Length: 336
Ligand code: TRP
Image 1 (tube, helix red, strand yellow):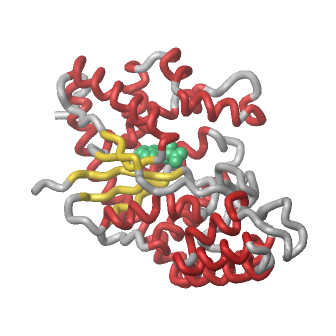
Image 2 (tube, rainbow, N blue to C red):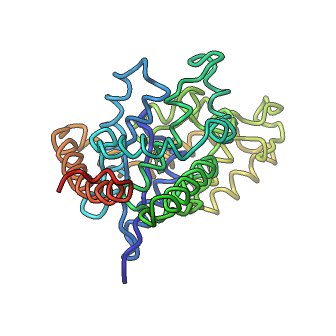
């Protein structure tokens, strides 16, 4: 049976946290273990520059951080090709070709782009850059350069995949059927709320637990998590439904533990500090293998770089093959 190509990626703008872990990383590791799929993961440094063009150091530094996060959760470079976007020039070429196949109005209507522009007022002010507005075009190039059939993403990315599908259909209509129309696979992973109860966990919100956090950092963060604000003294009856500690117990503790903790909270029998300590211990234990694997790679950065270069080399071959067929279809095949 022909394996289906899976293509995913992340912008390297920060280390990955438990939100990424439950939202997409676990699923990627699971799919990598199935012989139905052939997985590619790109570290989207060019895309990261679209909203960090003024901070190249940050992007550069986080390419290796994200690679280490991948390796530490069990992305296996023998099974999954990890590569760096900027080292695939064909992606930039395809982006230029595709830019004729999408209107400015269509990009401005893209809900993901719209939301992001609104969030990035600090950077863009009243007028967004051509590069940022066009990043869905570049993402269509990311996917099609590798004949990505399945793209596991969170809900927020769906409009980008839809946009890529439109570009592919238009291309195939005009130039002949060369490109594969990708399909989004909603990663069934959960979206994890932040320690402060915010719907989103993120660096800018300062409410994330990173896969690379030390035991002390994890404990400190859990101690600061939002609990039922009406519960002031230990004897007060608590409401676990509005407590982030109870929320994370559900993710990191056994069913029995969750039951005990919630019952004792509701009965005013257990204080928040004891409850948090138990949670911190469980998170520390669950993330221990990840942290230890990561520590290994932190001490062996040359191994990480080698993995990235080997993955990128493999990816370059695939993209070269695609661009050849694309250029032929577009009558740009001058070389004989
Ligand atoms: N836009 C994705 C994000 O912000 C990253 C990304 C770039 C991507 N290219 C991709 C995801 C191709 C899936 C497929 O997380």
